[in-house]
Length: 214
Image 1 (cartoon, rainbow, N blue to C red):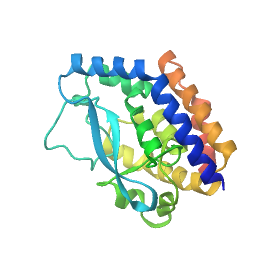
Image 2: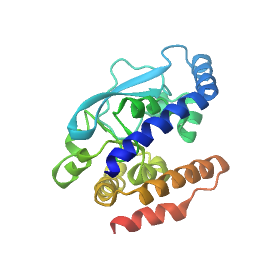
Image 3: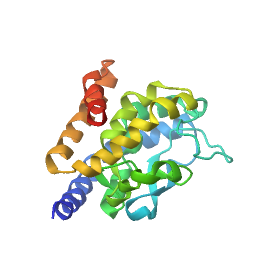
Image 4: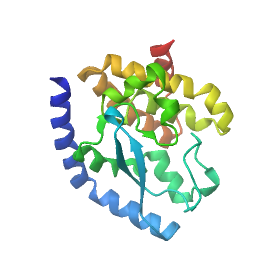
């Protein structure tokens, strides 16, 4: 029953957000075109609920590389242009995924959708439980990656220190999904973004996230 109510709320809330945030979309688009002329959106194949593939939308924050793949869990920082870095820090680049929420591909809170090049790692064994729910714009694993994963630049170090906890948090979410937890993740997301902008990382949230899987 909760999943049905969650889905209905998601469609209404995200549909309204698309209208309210239209000025932000315009600013993002203008910033992208000024920074690096080309496509405004980045469309990626992602694996979501029931391991079904869908097209996920983001504002493009990197220069175009024809031979790029998504095998690495770390973005090529050399390709991120200045406005792109601002969008990534404030999560503006993720706003087009509100459309994915309206279309039913995603929810506001949930595990992050897995890249096709990474699905074997993200959905292996017990972590396959993440495919039971719709992937989300935010969630415990996404916040952990935002607070800690973004500070780890070396891909090998990320695989060793960040990825194991990230996978555990995705499984933890599925086992503990409820309205209270979802609301907490939404509030924490805003706090984390405001903290990043103000230069005051919300380390207390990071410690809370770690505590969920320790």
